[in-house]
Length: 192
Picture (cartoon, rainbow, N blue to C red):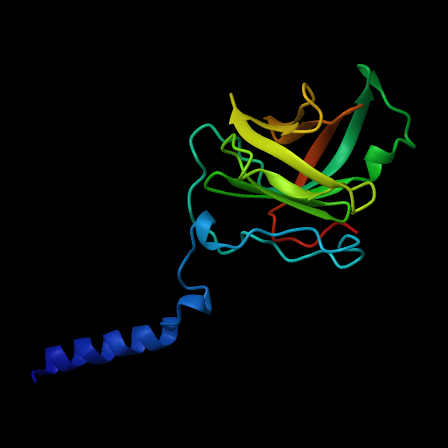
């Protein structure tokens, strides 16, 4: 064995040892399909904000998906087009949004809603309401014209949307519209 061949072999072995060759080591990224779907734990997650679901996913976002990834905090609320009072409950809301491929996960208020934004019932949200952590919900999720759209199956005509407006996110919920600031990446700890 020549010096160059031996040196290459040693260098290659050293690099493999430094990186690890275990597929579960985090060195290799995963696709959205390789990560199990997350669900709200019984009774909600309580005070223990869960770890990110899609942290190891490296699949690029699908075409047409708005980049909503981050930890977000409500900074403004409107009801019927007018500013909401300072004691409106939405002002206490923060959420983590994770995305990978056509998959999106919202973690907030005790719930984890994990979905594929492909317009199918099968891959939508099949979880529970934030209100009581027990009422089942089924929601179809899509990306339409740069907007994340949720359509609850049991409430025809109702839409919940998230979209970007510059650096902010606009969240249209049933009775209000909220403006959220991005505090940082999805991996950051929650603000409280």
